[in-house]
Amino acid sequence: EVQLVESGGGSVQVGGSVTLSCEASGYTSTSGFMGWHRQDPGKRLEGVAAIYTGGVNTYYADSVKGRFIVSGDNAKNTLYLQMNSLKTEDSAMYYCAAANLLPYEEVNWVRGGAPDIGYWGQGTQVTVS
Image (cartoon, rainbow, N blue to C red; front, side, top):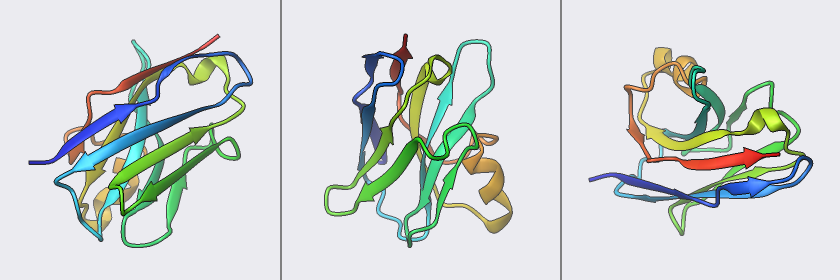
């Protein structure tokens, strides 16, 4: 059974930083994707950042490029999202997700367009004010 457990959310000031962690158990694919998605009430799910578990390829939404860094620690089975220069519009519930994707599914999934694919955590709230 795959379980993804997020931590590290909370309240942070504009311009501040926070690092989210996602502890993954039961997911050991070296040819899949792990990523962070976010959703604010009333808005669609947005893919924030993702990383290919078999290499160093990463994806970032335009809205976070240059501010967020996604990384993984295979030894700890943990995914991280370092969030810097936070803005009020970064406030959302952040979800960790993992999936083994067919090539034609990759773009849509990393962008948050396929919440029915893969494994998802319960989310951690980040509030920037």
